[in-house]
Image (cartoon, rainbow, N blue to C red; front, side, top):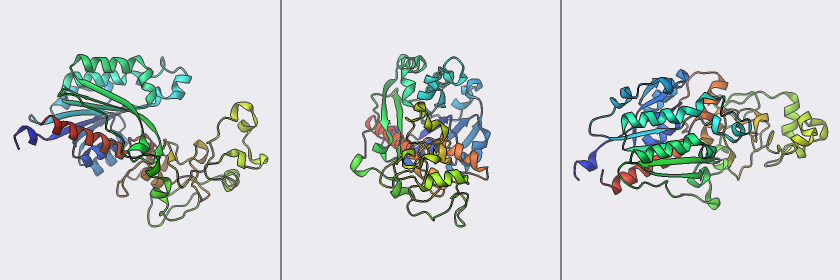
Length: 349
């Protein structure tokens, strides 16, 4: 083994949140040395679970020269990040929020970080809608101008072992040579399902907390929603209910297309995309497959592929839900980290 092959991989995670991406990268052998995020409430979970430094900072004002100093002189320098995806979501496009949302330029600050740090490898994860924007096209063009080889692809998360109906853009770029988004590891016949992930958890009622696991708690439901979920079938919709239980929006033509709201998940399918509102029965198909309640915090975390021993801190239930829903699934971090490791082996670094 020569010296180049023994160079340590060191990663800084921009927009790190509580460390979903960081955890996966670490598991794959790409050591994260720091995460940067503007939400100070993420500090405990990030540092407690990942053994890395959390830097509380606004990326738009951050001096990336300070980040550059954190890397060891002989390391393979990696910069990764998942800029907040809300401004690039399909809903945001429909609302024409481009001119009003200051988060649109966060990718430009990501570029600023790349220009300053000059990492060997860059990775970015986001919603597919970002590909339609000029800010993303400029991001790719700038990487190519800086002599990076770039590959990106919209992936379906279940094809990489994530048990939820989630499509994400993954981008990889390297100054060392060609780098590729990794090949799929699963197919429809062997997807990880809701049953695989949450079936064994103790039964709880709406508004209850498990005695053995404080994170296994769900929100209380109003009597009308208890009646609705009792009439809900796995994978079904509000069409399964008595008409007297319908919300006013479903009595209008404009509301009849929203089939998954107030729905139950199916045991033998993947879950819906875990959002920040996964604990709210009326915010999507977040009803438990059998029990008359919405997902618990523990169930949402497990479906996001966080391990059972991941600590989220002593925070209000809504804040933990937001942290979990905003996270990159750690399993996708493992996939990205594996691609980086393979790339470095191919180029002897």
